[in-house]
Amino acid sequence: MNRTALVFGATGMVGLALVKELIANKQYTSIMLFVRRNLDISDERLSQIIINYDNMAEMAPLAVGHDLYCCLGTTMAKAGSKLAFRRVDYDYPVQIGQIAIKNGVENYTLISSIGANKSKFSFYLNTKFETEEAIRALNFKRFNIVRPSLLLGDRDEKRTGEKIGIVLDKLLSPLYFGKMKKYAGIQSRTVARAMIQITLSDKDGRVYESDELQILGK
Image 1: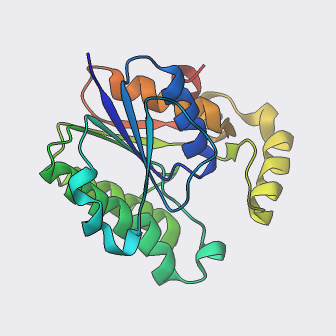
Image 2: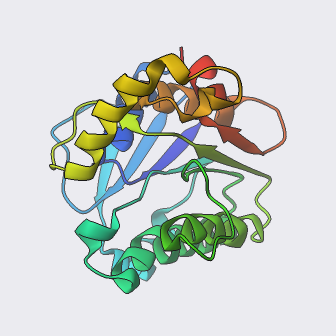
Image 3: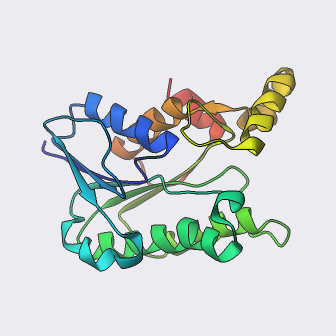
């Protein structure tokens, strides 16, 4: 079966791992990357489309396929303000969804965050939750939400808070059992593998927490 994957956020840690896993997956005959800069990666099934996220109408006619993977995300520190953070983590994923649903894309798989909820105390987690709900309201045939814990793996940019989190994750590893399992750090490659398995399954769309991603992405 000819199948096309649309990938947004391919230059990030999980996004790049996802691209590599998609290339290895023979169920996809076409892999379209919507990126701000070309990746140094090639495959006969791979195409890269340079996108201006602040003017997505230009790429709208090209966002046609079966499965949409959204790996967009930033941090408050990198964004510099709540407004800039929300633009990347809410506006872009929702606008992409609006375009995709009009183009007949059936499946949307979104990277969110562990702990995403309607919170008065965390702008970050509240934004993630609002993004989930806004895309859910678009009524894709299948909408899957993956909520990884601390992401592990090689990253181009330096994130001090993340480095501290990795150290703490190692120290707390003996405590990760039972309900605490979902808080253990998870490799970006594991998340990518799980995303593909989830998207290609015939199950109804739902939320996948980090401990389940660990199992699915092995």
